[in-house]
Length: 362
Image 1 (cartoon, rainbow, N blue to C red):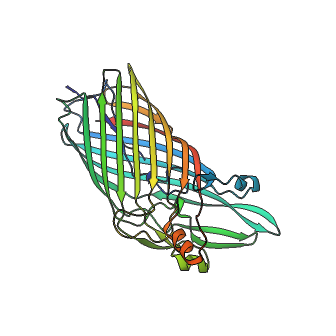
Image 2 (spheres, rainbow, N blue to C red):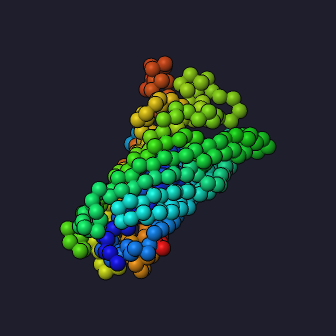
Image 3 (tube, rainbow, N blue to C red):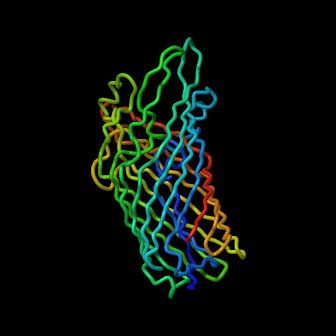
């Protein structure tokens, strides 16, 4: 039996990206991960596998242009409301205390409520999707031997995200009480993005004592594909969307940064951290054309982890949004250049995200 002061908990958003998505129309799917530790965790030689399951839910409804909330949307009753749930399952093959391989599969159920106008009256309708998202395979390695260095360590992860999730899921959109049009659901609730991506991760921790420690995580998904050929319209595209290229959905990069402090009380570990979910305007590799809602969410992230036994732990993390910023996209910049008038789209964000999950070793 060897004592190792860490356990891997894989989430989300965001995207997944997630996943699933992070906090609304800024499309961060449940493909990001993070690592925490607890001083009571034991990893024995018989535990060759690890399974993590995470449940995530959010409701996005607050519209922002830049950092300015568009409060009139709720006053007028025409705000877009997303209800997003993701079950994220990750299986690890523990090769040895230093190396591991992970396979992650998100399954999502989403609903998007929006409005149409008939005879001067607003009416609501909803579109939905359900199914598996983009699978991710990753390899992890601790830079230092975790058995010899239990006080602190840094882990590197490198992976590939495959376009297994449906990026052209369709449902019916109401244009009047008697008319419905079949078309792709909004990008914010599509199950996949249509791109094969490369993921890079850094996970680290340092224990000042048996009680107090700090942690940090960095995740980046690079999607080289520019656009996925999925129409961003139902019916006929607008002249503006054809001119600025937003008539087709983009395949964006995603980024997640986390850092915080944790305190252990016997089997319970409480943490308080900072989180930055970001969908960049420009991709790291390739072009950044097509429709996307870039932006970032800065959140405070309290969390609790309870170690039920040497092989089972449960946790809950609830990022609470502090700053929400819908930045200017490439199509926005093109429209600004064509018209001479500054243009910037909006996005809907949530107030908080609920993550509840468990970690099993066997």
